[in-house]
Image 1 (tube, rainbow, N blue to C red):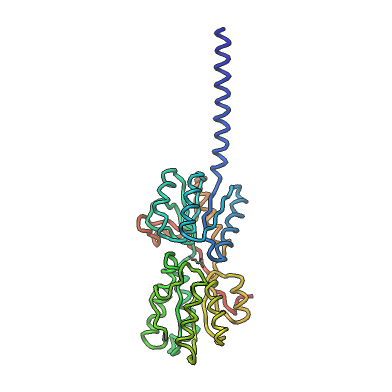
Image 2: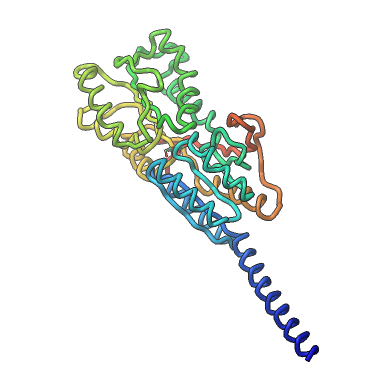
Length: 336
Ligand code: BGC
């Protein structure tokens, strides 16, 4: 009788051990799961998402990718993915400052977070930052205008209008600040003239980087200030917004305007070829996602990520170790 009881207890023990074993194997599956939370606001995010998902799947990660149209939706998505306890979360934040509270939960669950393209502010829950050199992007735009308008050698006066990205995105501020650092002396010298007078970030910002928000502003500027006057140049913070501005320039019969862009959207390459857009600063998604995958592997597998910047991105709480990829200027000379 005693032996039967022992046998019975032993069987229960083995059964429980097997169940725990199953639990282990499902944990190890979730240890290779990555949640990606991106905006759906511009074509470049879709390209980045597709590229990241593909590379991660090639590395045998399971991928849950979410796209959001506004901050509230994205906060909801991030909260939900934290509950599913993936081994890593990659966030392209719609609002750089909106995630501090939501991410405390990720920290409590020890889920590493990687900021993608845009830094996440005011939290120590971010492990790494994968991006392009945002200072170089803003500077590159300014230098292109300086050179194309021959400003260093006294070129001008030229009329220019300015657009900036969405105020809730930290990058938008960096791009504009860096560009204006190059251009400001030429406004002072009178070589550049902004007839609308709208030169500060807030007046130039396009809410949420949503290109349709740029349309009424360029329409009004053209109607109010450029009926007869020539508009020589427009600073556009990305390709999507450049597309809308160029559309309005054409409707207003102003085809030869020097205009910038950012991202390297296929539509921008076509406009550069046809001569309606002057240049874009291309951010190759595969270059960035390859670095991001290295970071994900580092936090999940304990390997070494590529880091090339440990000083620039203080997010208000910590300085986030970053890899900043090099963007490339594309204009009619190299668009082919
Ligand atoms: C990115 C740009 C992008 C913009 C709009 C910025 O944070 O750096 O590449 O065009 O967001 O999505």
